[in-house]
Image (cartoon, one colour):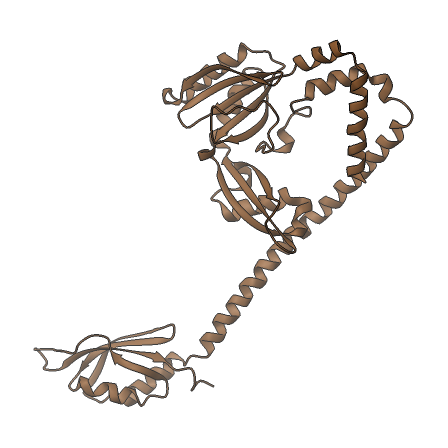
Length: 360
C-alpha cells in the first residue's frame, strides 16, 4: 500500500510539473547547486555541479597538515553560494567493506542489525563510525540475503564536516569513490551519513521541490489529496511503531542462531573428549606397563594422541610393551634412541594415538 501511494504521488507531481511554464521550470532547476569535496589519498579536490555539469574549483595537497587543510577548506567554501548542498566523497581506501549474510527477518530493521554487526566484525563501536550498506540482489539463497557493510571511522571524517560547517554549509551526503576525478552530479546511492544527520531537504532535487511546492500550493490542497496524505501518514506511523517493536526481537533472533551454532560445536567437542580415555587412566596403565628401570621426564596428552620422553635401560623394548596397552595404538619412536653417557641409559621419544574403542 505504501509503495502504491509513493508511485501515485510521483506520477501526480510529474503531471503538476508539466503545468509549470518552461521558463519558470528552467529558473527553478538552475538554482540547484552541488559542492563536491573529494578526500583523495593525497589531495583534497573541490568541484561544483550546476544543472548536472561538474566544474573543477580548487585542489590542495594533504601533506600540509590538518590545520592548514581545514583553514583552506573553510576559505574556499565561504566563497560559494551558501544554499549549495555538499557531498563529501571519500577514497575507497578509507572505507572498510565486509560482506555479510543475514536472515530475511533482518531486512525490515537492517540498520539496527548492522549496528550490532559493526561491533562484532570491526574493531570499532557503532557510535565511532559512519556506515551504510549495499544489498546484493543476486546472492543469499533461500531465507537469506547478502549485504555489503561499508564503514569509515568518524574521527577521520569529522574534521572535514566541522570545516564545512564552519564555512556556513552543511554536509548532505558522505559517499565513496574509486576515482577522485570521476564526478557524478547526483545524489549517491551510498550515503554513510546517518539518516538523523541528513538535512530534511537533502538530495539533488531539494531546492527544486521546495520551489515547486510553493508554486502549486493551491493544486496540492485539493480535497482528494488531503485524505490520502492523512492515510499515508497513519500507515507510516503504524509501520514505524511495528519496526521499533520488532527491532530487538530481530537482534535477539540473530544472537540465538549464533548461540545454537556454538552450542552444537561445543557438544561435538565434548562428545569427542568423552570418547577419549582420562589422563589418570592412561598414566596408571603406563606405570604398570613400563619396567622399573624406565622413568618419564615428559608426558604430553593432547587431542587424540600422547607423547612421552624419558630414559630407560632398554628403550628398544618399550614399543612392544606399550602395544599391549588397551588405550594406545600406532606406538612408534618419534626420534632415534640416544644413549646417555653419564648414566648409561637410553633416551627415548615415543608417540602414540589414543584409542576410542575401549572407552565406555
